[in-house]
Length: 149
Image 1: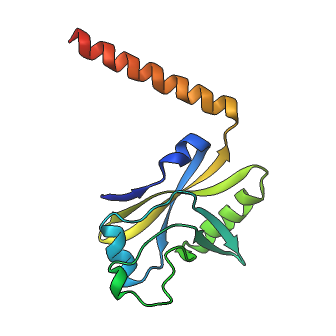
Image 2: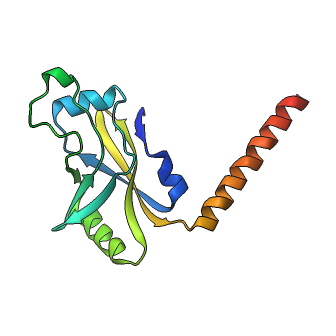
Image 3: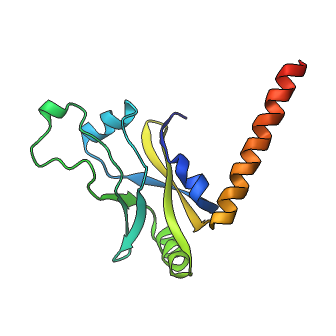
């Protein structure tokens, strides 16, 4: 499994409660661009419109910018492929207060590109500070272990 794009800020800004896998409807040049690692999930989110999930604000540039159609939009909405049961589950979860659908990473699974999305709850400032402190402590421990060994 190759990970082509990751939303690293999602783990800092949100508490990920659950993860799901969804397919993406993409054009051929978008697939090639993603496989080159050019896609960015920063600031993107998933929303449901008429019982259909869409990936919004994900930046996937054209594979060959000079050869791309004039109407090509790298931040267009992309439909996600989920079965009805999963969509109904997501509709129920998004109606709960404070929960959001956040894309976490784009990866391939047996030659198909998949999007891992998380049902997430936003962190407060204190939670973010706590995770920064935790990261600093872990870094110090690793550095001390290297100096001892």
